[in-house]
Image 1 (spheres, rainbow, N blue to C red):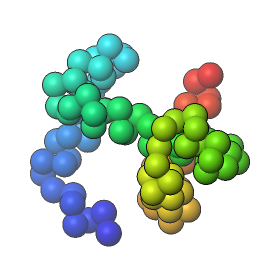
Image 2: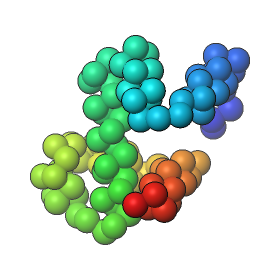
Image 3: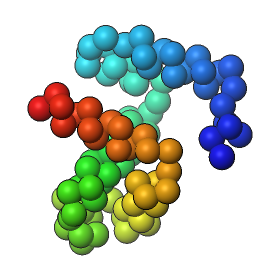
Image 4: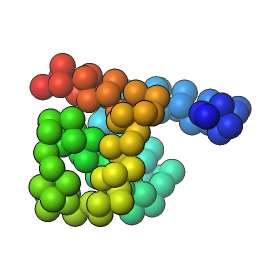
Length: 97
């Protein structure tokens, strides 16, 4: 499935993300490449994935994050059947705590 969107431009984006060395650099890049709404939506989805992985319920997650049940359901689907990107990032974030 992911192969449909992988191309030279998405490769370039992934390499650009990997080149960032600090949170400040990441903020600067994100601010230039995406709208504040898009950045907030990505951040919200990551938090939803964290809460789902910790066993929170949909109502608890909706209350804490403001995410719709559709967003929560979509994130849960990708946690269960996706490319394991959320799981990888969540594991790495836990190691950094």
